[in-house]
Image 1 (cartoon, helix red, strand yellow):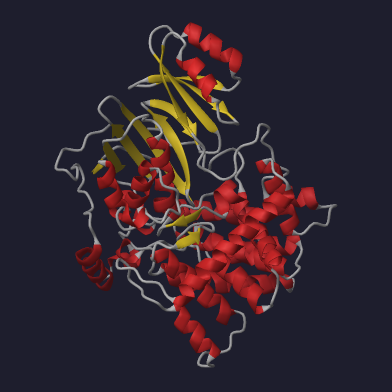
Image 2 (cartoon, rainbow, N blue to C red):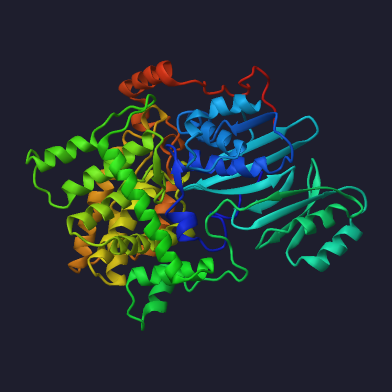
Length: 546
C-alpha cells in the first residue's frame, strides 16, 4: 500500500486545524484525538446502526504496542459512537458500546503499511459492510487514504458525498458533472463510487434527487471534522520562513500580525474571527491550568498531583528564584497532569507536548501581568512557526521522535515569547531556530506506554529552553542556521531514528527494569484490554489482510 503524499489535511496547513488544536480529552493527539476523528468518518459509511467493527494494525507500526495505553481504543470507539473529541463520556466508552450493541475487535498482522499510525477499519451491520484505511499524521490530524478498496485523500476540512452505483455509469456521471465541478470516479476492490467534494452541505432535496437516479444504490455523506473548513479559493500569503520574510520585508509586521493574515486568508475568515478563536482557546487553557493546579485523579497513570505543590513551594520561598520559570513550570506540569487524567486540554501542537507552549506563554503573561489579547497574539505567533513545521515536516513522534513534539513546541513557544516582548518577526524566527536546534535528536520513549514519563520533564525542559532562546534572540544572538533549514534537518534526523525510539515504548527509558515493573503494575490494576499478538485477533480468530 503506498503511503499518502500529504503530510497534513490539505495543501496549506491551518493554525487551528494543524497546529493549535484540537481542544480534546485524552492522552495523545496522534492516538486519542486522531483515532476519534477517524472513527467518526468511518461511522458515516454506514447509514444504519453499527453492529461490528474490526480494527487492524501493522505489526511493524507504533499502534500494536501503544493503542491501549495512549487512547486509540477510546478514540476509535468515541468516533464510532459519534462523540466529539472533548466529550465527557469518552472515559466510559466501554459502557456506551454495550448500550449501543457494538462489538469492536482488534488484530495485528504484517500489512507492510509505510506509515506507523495506520488504521484499517471494517464496519458491519446486518445489511452492509464497508472498509476504510486512515492515517494519523500528527497533532490530531488525519488522512483517509482508502475507502472500500478505492484510493482517496480525505483530510476532514470539506464536505464529501459518496454516490455508490451499479451497472452502467455513463448516464449518472454525465448528470453529476453538470451539477458538480469537483467529482471523481473511484473504482475499489470491494465497491465503486463517485466522490463529490463541496464547500457546503448538500441539501436533503438534492441528495434525494441523486438517490432517485437510475443506477444509484445509495449515498453516504462524510461531514468535515475540522474547525476551519477549506474555502473555495484556497491560498495563503506565504508558505515558508523565507517567503514570509519577503512578504513582510516592507510591511514592518510582527509575527502575530503575519499569523493573523495567514490564517484569515487560509480559512476565508476575518482577522477578527481568527483573534476571537484564539482568545477562546486561551480561555480553555486557563480552565485546564486551574484544574491541574487544584489536583487531578486518575487510576491508570504513573504520576500523581505535583504541579500545585511546586507552586506552593515557590510562593513559600522554598525554591530557587528563577523568576518567570517558577510560574511557567507549574503551568506546564498542570496541563500535563490534566491530560493524563483525560481532562480537557489543547493539543499545541500535540497532546504529548500540550504543556510547553501554553504553559510558557501563559506563565509569562501572568508573571508580567499582560492581557489575554496579548496571550492570544503570542499563541498566534507561535502557531505560525507551527505552520512552517507542519508544511515541511510532521508533529507525529511515531515518525520523528519527540523533537517534532516537544522540540516543535519549544520553537513555537520561543517565537511566541519573543513576540510577547515586542520582538520583531526576524527575532521570533531566530528564537525558534535556536530552540529547535537545541532539541534535535530528542527521542520518544514513553514509560509503560503512557504519555507521562519522561514527557513531563521534556515539556518543562522545552519551556525553559524557549524562555532562554527568546531572551537570546531579543538580545541579538545569531541563530546561524535559518529556521527552514533547521526544520528540514529535524525531519531528516527524526526519520533516521530507530523505530524503537519513535513512540513505540520499545526502547530508551521504556525498557528499563523500573519502567517494565511500572508497566506490569499498571496493566494489573487498570488495563482492561490486552495488546493483541501478531497474527491473532482479540476474539481468538486469525489475522487476515483486508
